[in-house]
Amino acid sequence: MRYKINGTHRTKTFPSWDNATSYKKKVEGNELAGLVIDPKGGERLFGLYAEQWVEHRLVKGKPLTPATRQGYKALIRRHLRPAFGETKLRQVTPERVRKWHTEVTAESQDQAAKSYRLLRAILMTAVSDELIARNPCTIKGAGIEQARERPMLDTTTVLKLADAIKPRWRCLILLGGLGGLRTGELLGLERRDIDLLHGTVTVARQAHEITGQGRVITAPKSEAGRRTVALPKVVLEALSDHLDEFVAPAPDAPIFTGKSGLPLRRADLSAAWKDACDSTGLSGVKPHDLRHHAATIIARNPNVTLKELMTTIGHSSPIAALRYQHATAERGQEIARYLDDVVEAAQSTPETAAVPLSS
Image 1 (cartoon, rainbow, N blue to C red):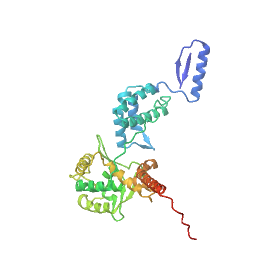
Image 2: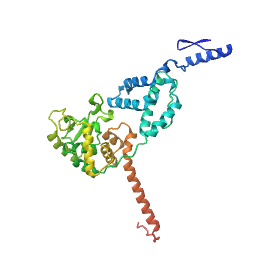
Image 3: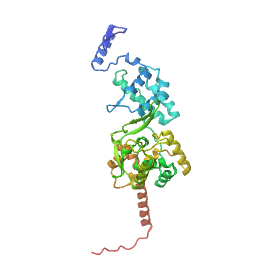
C-alpha cells in the first residue's frame, strides 16, 4: 500500500488489506493531530545540528553572549561530539543518553550536569523543529549540579588579601569582597562608573576573554546585573587613591590595568591572586569567593530585604539570592541552641516559690 506523510509518498507491505487500511487510517489521523514527524528530519547528524544550534540560539530574544557561546562549544567539543557527533538525531535514544551520562559522571559530576542540560536543550529544539518526536533526555535530576560549599572568607581575611596583593589591584579585592561585583564586572569597570561624590559604583558592562577574539565587552549578565551599588567608606577611600595613581583621566579609562596600562587580563589577575593567597596562607580560595563573602555579609543584616539583596548583588532570581542567606540561617541555629541551653538550665534549677506579681 502507498500512503503519504507530510506530503511524501511512502510504501509499506501488509499481510492483508484490512491491516493496510487500518494502518493508513492511523497514519492519516496522527498527521491531522500533528503527531507525525518527517522521518528525513531525524537523519540529520547531531554534531552539525548542535553547532548550528549554538550559533542561532536565542535567550529571551537575544543571542548568546560570547562567553556563553564559548562555554557551550567547549562542552560540545569535550563531551557531546565524541559520543553523538556522527549520530543521527533519531538514533539518540534514552538508553544511549543514560550510558553516556554514566560515563561522563564518572569523570566529573559537574561536567556531566552541564553537558546533560546542554544536550537536553539542543534536543528539545529538535523536537520543536519536528525533527524528532520526543526528547530522549529523561534522567531525573541529571542536570542538577551538586555545588560544593565554597570557603567562607571572613572580613579580616578579605582585608589581609587586599593588603597582600600588589597595590594596583588592592581596590579590586575590596570591590569584590565588600561590593559584591563579579570578576567580569570588575574587569569591565571604567572611570565614569565611579561616583565618589555619592559613594557608588555603577555596573554597566563586563569583560570576557574569548578564544580567538581576545577581550570582549558585553552587557551585564542580566538586566538585574546592570545596577548601582553603594560602597562602604573603606572602599571609597581606597578608590579615591586608586583613581589618582593608576587610572588614566579619560572617562572610558579602565579601572584595573596591568603594568603596561592595558586592561587587566584574567591570567595576570590569577597569578597575582595566587601570590596573595600564598602569602596569607590561604588555599582553595578563588576570586569569586570575594563576591560570596560580600553577599553573605549583606544577607546577615536583619534589616536587608530579599529584594534589596538581589538588587545589590545583581541577581534576577530570588532562588539564586537565597543561597547567600545560609549564614543568616546558621545564625538562627545558634540562637535556637542558645534557647535550648536556657530551657535546660531552667529545667535543672530546683523549683522556687512563686512570687506573686504586684498589682
